[in-house]
Image 1 (cartoon, rainbow, N blue to C red):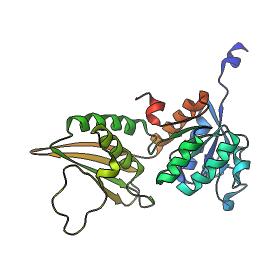
Image 2 (image 1 turned 90 degrees about the vertical axis):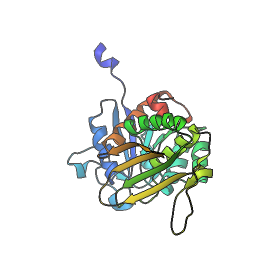
Image 3 (image 1 turned 135 degrees about the horizontal axis):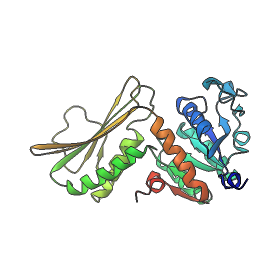
Image 4 (image 1 turned 60 degrees about the vertical axis):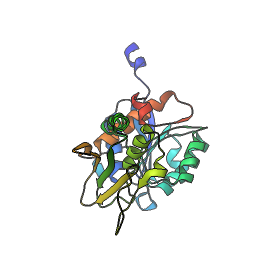
Length: 273
């Protein structure tokens, strides 16, 4: 009996986009996580009232709903990998209900990022363009390389994703650019180049270039090229699938357990600061 009382109370987690690829993987992962349980599933009206585990071949006991308050009524934290407009709709309800957020959605504009930061005054939020542990370690390696190669090397970021991705460059690529720019004492807004076409002239050595590839089912490849005179250094991270994002999201859920408010990222979750 004493052993039973020491078991952690599972965190009650809702999943946005429950019928999507990430949503299904999150629901399956929650099924096997001893310290978390599925408490809500959000999706469009066409999927409402279906069991959230039906497509995965099990009965979760949680019905998919389209109404936000109903889906969050029994939840402590919402995991969101949807689209910016859906995230913003969920943000206000989460703030009102005191539900924490783990945001893996990308493509936010500056006003939307500001709204998320404002909501974090009342609820705890983890927001990261990539929840994977490995890619966040890669960010640290890029910062180290950028400090050492801040002069004499041209920097290009090349990313590739599946044909269904709707934003470019990817949130991970932009984060890489931000990390590199910060390490060199620059602001990415002032030095990023997102497109080249026609007569461009010589490359400005102070810029950070981006190139995006879309096709097939590529989960996510990112390479940062530091091209100098007589040498090239490439730092690459490749995702074989979304499993790393799922496990990182659950780590973020656990990290938020004793946080009342604040905006955090995966560096905070993984203790990389």
